Amino acid sequence: MDQRLKNLKKAMKSTVFNELPFTEKHRAEIKRQTKRHGDLQSSSVNDILTVLNSKKTGFEIAKFLIARGVKAFLKNEGLLYAQLHKLEQEGLIDSQWEFSNDQKQKYYFITDKGKKLLAKSERSSDILKTIMIDSPEGSA
Image 1 (cartoon, rainbow, N blue to C red):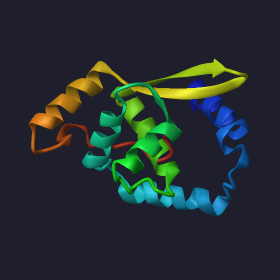
Image 2: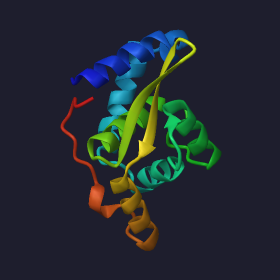
Image 3: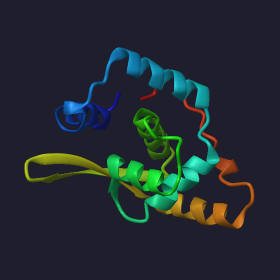
Image 4: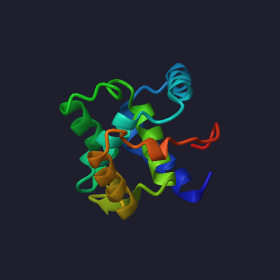
């Protein structure tokens, strides 16, 4: 696990997930659903890239997606973060940590590669066919 992910895990435990009950049962369910979804659903990828017209936290992304009627991540935030991680590995999005008021938050934003893919998907009826992501198990 690279250092950025270790820092993310540590920061999430002390901030965002501090008040959330995140049991082993919940973790196992997220892993099961991630395996079941295997490849990213092209519509979900398209929705995520579209929402990232400006930098946003994972929580903000989830709120925007739900407001747009994307139900895949409702009560399943773990799957969203897994997909954000995969998109980041593919170079379609990037992230940066920001500090304010003694809080550390991770912001995601679309890269030039992601913008090109999004533009291509808008012109094509085969949305994001070129990036079906095959990730080795346990890469998070």
